[in-house]
Length: 378
Ligand SMILES: NC(=O)c1ccc[n+]([C@@H]2O[C@H](COP(=O)([O-])OP(=O)(O)OC[C@H]3O[C@@H](n4cnc5c(N)ncnc54)[C@H](O)[C@@H]3O)[C@@H](O)[C@H]2O)c1
Image (tube, rainbow, N blue to C red; front, side, top):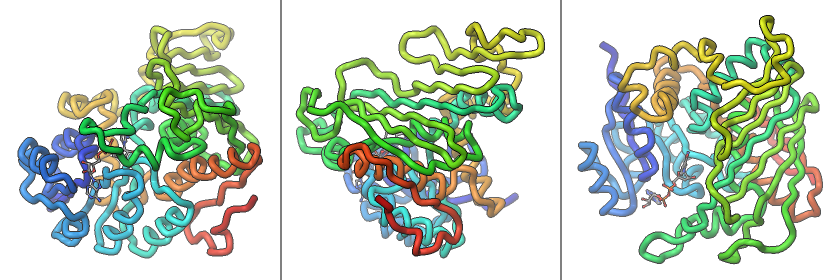
């Protein structure tokens, strides 16, 4: 039997993948790290994790194969760089980093290390998103040319921890202008527009402050993105407005039909698509899961323990993809370049918004990207 892959977890958010890791017989959760000692002990005891660390670097220097980084956003790149240099594979929570330089460092560090870096964009792994991808791949939408992703989640209470102290989100999220948290919106739609790259963006937001807390973050920031072949992606991130949660609000428009995610008000994800049996199918909505036969096989045959990891198996498959990439020494689909491109849309949206919504080019993140291209053109 192959040696188990020893994984270390950093930050409490790692809880979201613990069931997925435990469902994989090839994995051992060997260590956990959190600055907060109470949290650390609580998690280590609850999940029976043998080694506990308060200092990330101490865990990264220990005898592990891989680390899942689920600490605050501004820790992701410094910790990923340290872990890669220490010879560990990395799976990182969203977003990838908080400055453009960090993104350039990250790509170079991944390439230099030869280790696996996977971006844990969990919204890409829901059965709905994977089913739509399967339909796109089969050509059932024709040529998709317009997509929308919205993350509408008033979470401004997270500015403070329950003890009243400011959380990291006060500065790195609610203190930022632009689409500070873009990848739950971009990840699924760019998975559908698989061969496209975001080339240029412009960002818009209502002038003035409409939120109750008076935070710097604009309310209802929208970024319009052009891809290399001229397709349009619209993303909206709104974490401050007074409204109910609607974080998985997606649309896709192709030449043969359209998809609309469930949204807060409708009864379920819907599709309007032409088929041989229904040539006018693009004129009326039907439940997306009428097409469930096209779900990827692994979602159809998921075991109970895989499904119980969460999100219809999605929280298992994200872990499984990371572990398979390590086993096969193969770049994961959600690689460092996708992570950086999607994160850069958020970082550069700040520059666009604060410069009269001007168009900003997104660097072409790819293997061996020359240093001369690691700049921001305005
Ligand atoms: N994918 C998703 O759906 C999703 C959902 C929520 C949060 N997130 C992401 O997860 C990350 C964490 O968010 P959260 O809501 O759990 O934050 P949190 O503030 O609730 O928890 C962060 C934890 O990290 C610990 N920590 C802080 N700095 C550390 C360090 N240097 N070394 C070790 N531990 C450290 C803190 O003690 C705390 O326990 C963020 O990047 C966030 O964007 C992703």
